Image 1 (spheres, rainbow, N blue to C red):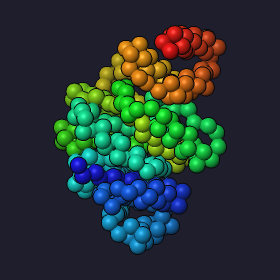
Image 2: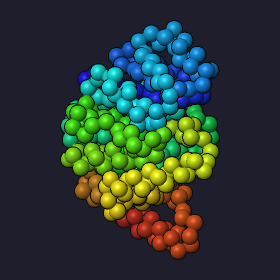
Image 3: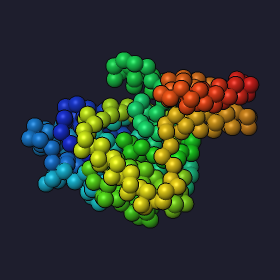
Length: 313
């Protein structure tokens, strides 16, 4: 299976794309991958770094967009240029450790009904986010890898995928199409694509034994009035495309659903990682609603899940 990795670049090369490529290059499979960097009209400093990139990474392709096309259109440029059987969209601020891309890819050899697969991470807005200790990037990576390596390979069904790092088989792209460029600079395009893939009959999965560190919020930075307006606009676009009944599910509830899936497997007699369960429980207790009533109701739900898990042990 040929793997194509597409990295969307925009400014801050040393803190994002540069580190991302260093992490990829440390993987023994690096030379076998097709790696494409798509630059969304970065500043001159990043542009110069990307021009020199060939000196360190001769087989990496760099595509320079004349303007900032946004997340969807920028990635679509890379998808069109890619020739792989499996397309991995990788944010420039997402840093895969050795072997993690291979773990994503290997999941497709067992079940071709997976439409999208993504790793667990330290920062995401959905069930891919696990608990990681405060500290440096190295601390978070070490904690995340401990989660990934503590237990057998396992894929859990997800409601939606976060596109900081997502693996998409070529047949899915051929059937579902490219990312919707109507979402502009970004926000909700990954949710939209997740729903489109599910509507086509595929499943979405969180690969519990693959961890990719995500720095987060480097493209948009501080939330400005313009960004808030973009979020509001794209949320309306989601409702227009998929109807008013779509669920904008909070990460708290998504994480609880993952715990319920672990509980179901445990009750069915399957061997599952208590370490991962405890991590998810700790994460659940760290995400409390601000409203006292919502907090009370949420903590009751967490306590019920925890009690059932303890009884199953």
